[in-house]
Image (cartoon, rainbow, N blue to C red; front, side, top):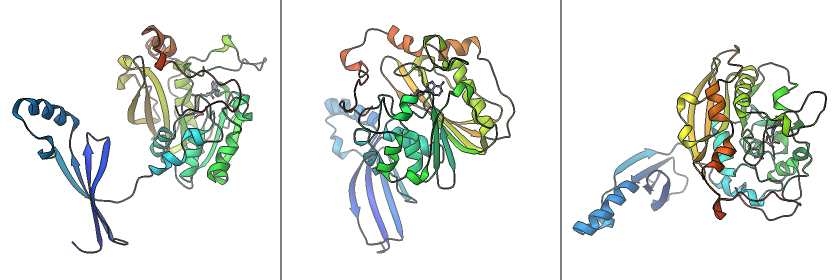
Length: 341
Ligand SMILES: C[S@@+](CC[C@H](N)C(=O)[O-])C[C@H]1O[C@@H](n2cnc3c(N)ncnc32)[C@H](O)[C@@H]1O
């Protein structure tokens, strides 16, 4: 092996656990080779049974599959630690975890020279993730307390989060706006939209009632309508080639790819699930704008109303909360204990 090559071997179990088992280090290598051994969990289960019957020693088993490849880039997993919620200046019970925020930012292709918006920005988890990747970011939220920082855990505002990570130059600001009635010019000016729409689990969706400027119980904004508005908003405001990335809450048993709402200007690129308790899940949906705006579906179908609405009620219907499943109580004062969700 030439001194210009740095090679290492990784023990890889069922695609989610990788452990470095050997490494040969050379200074400033030109080429880095990776050798991955896949020791599947299923194989291990099978082996455990076989061990009892035939005395097979697991350690002597050959890997299920071996991959050898050239490393073309490094991951940024260290950012998960740097951006962990418990250390962040301003968070709320609805703040998205650092890991899922960075995954979302990756799916949206956040990078220098792009403009990203979160129309349900909350404490700005997606904004800070995209700013870290070099994108210019802006957001909006219906709740003035979110923007003033009077409902968070700890002292601070979204601005403080940017200051904390040294990315203020990539933050264009937050506005108080109702997504159902956004006062934005309908033009293609955004490269990406990332959001975690409210679905009534910890934070219900509301609309501002025109003329009264307040949101209350009677101004609910059903997820079935919100999703169609989101697709319409993306089709109108994204540049062609831009991306919409959002978290879709659904009960696991009700999810199917065919039920993901579509739009004539947008193509579904990917969906991935994050399982939750009580039969619930949220799905990371990635859509790519493939054509200039044409109007999409405006009213939800009966089926869409049935599967997208009342998420919270469906979860509770599954049964009583076990103590450990209960959501954290809403903080009453600043300075309460912090917990990564
Ligand atoms: C799930 S939280 C988003 C949390 C955010 N991703 C974070 O990490 O902090 C949903 C947000 O949507 C906001 N919201 C609810 N209805 C809205 C509406 N009609 N227009 C704009 N924002 C709304 C809520 O105030 C809440 O902050």
